[in-house]
View 1 (cartoon, rainbow, N blue to C red):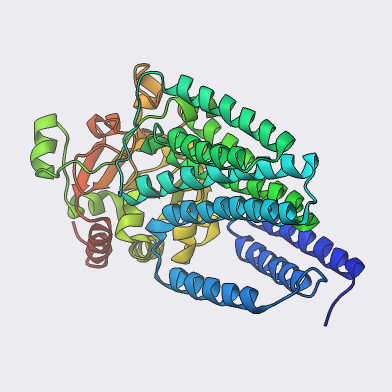
View 2: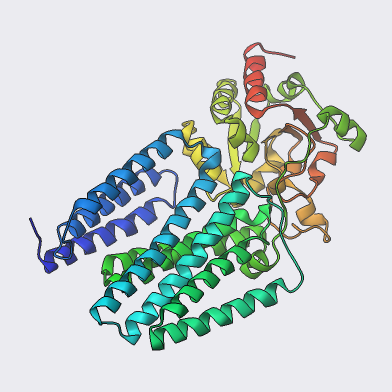
Length: 467
């Protein structure tokens, strides 16, 4: 069965509309599931319309590729932990980048054999190869940093920015030469240098800026897909690539605003690394630094008769998979008439929406979840703020210490609550490597332990009516 070009164009238009609805749906946790359904429907229509189009000559390799991709995707979907989702996204971005490079190279070789190369096509191929190669190598480095394969610390050296600028100029030069003279040598050199530039652009990025980088690489992958669409003369791929490219760029901007950092500062001045420092006795370190430690019973004493408790989830909650224990604890508090609110910072975790997804996974009602700007005025009215593994997004240094790398970053006003309890495994700083001044506040105490275990103990203590 083969469909006409007009039918295929209509199918592509329907797919594009569904993708736009999908993006709209993903703007809110309440509509995210519906948005995903729109996206899946749009992709199904797009794939079927492409397979039934007149350009497909053989289905053998296509079926093999779809089967292999479905198998790998299914296994990943079943096995990947939510804590590993950021690095999985980075890995998927690298696939898009490499696909753009391979499609461009294959198109060049095919047209060269047919003698149908032209300057416009060569320019399109150059753009696809350069963006795709930068996306691929940059995403691989981001994956390595997030996965802990390589250090999350920024890697900087003298003359780094000048070298990147020089590489960009040389790449453009070879791209122009490739477009004008159609030489394989220029293609090879341009591609290798673009891979190198992607590597050099990401290695100076520290752990604290990784959420923005993931979003930025998402934008790059969209532009790589759009460039591939021009190469293949596929209108839908152009539309989808532009949607991803623009949405990724907008999200990067929103996150930079949330961190009070410009995208140039992120790319050229990344700070913060991983938190793999050796663990020492948490209570001992706290005592040495003058930080108060508390027990589960101490926290329950103030929470069981409270009017309002605000819970602040962070990456520590994700690592411990404590969201389900928090759901049980929330329900027990609500049974006692306590108002429970979850406060979400835009860059909490390692990826945009990380905390929202985890809380939704535990079926925590959307009405209980509030974003930073909405919840900040409520901290002053809260009896207790419970911080579960969040560090940088609660650090008052962002408001008071002008020498701090995170100064000016909007944070959750946790310190304004009457009592603050922070669940931590140790006294190690957050992903930015900046010590949290919240822990030295008179109204703050730290409960040391695994977030899931502590939350379960809080629930058990509440059931027993401890105090």
